[in-house]
Image (cartoon, rainbow, N blue to C red; front, side):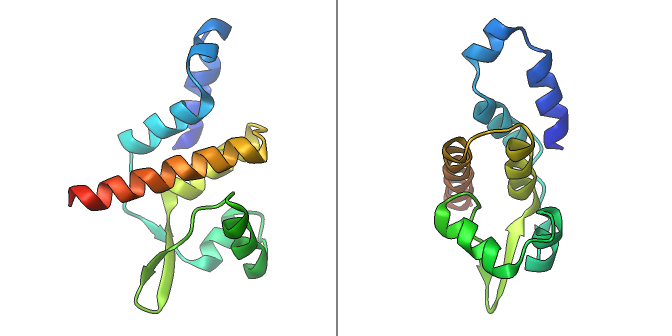
Length: 116
């Protein structure tokens, strides 16, 4: 999902890329094709190079991964958020740029809840 928009971003002229941040492209992509699929901790770990549970929660604390949705005693992550963050990592974005993306994803999550 995010790969398609990353490719479209890279096809833009350098001037157009300067005018539109990578995070904005990811944000547009996330809102245009949002899925309702939720990932468990083990699925998130697999999507993030099989990182340990403790590392996943450390990344949340550092602000480089969105916190999970809580559903009773369970936790899950929206798949589009994990995909967007992974695309930013693959694109070589800095931790600060990823933190900004995480904030955008969390803001979108909050806005979606308020609309319901």
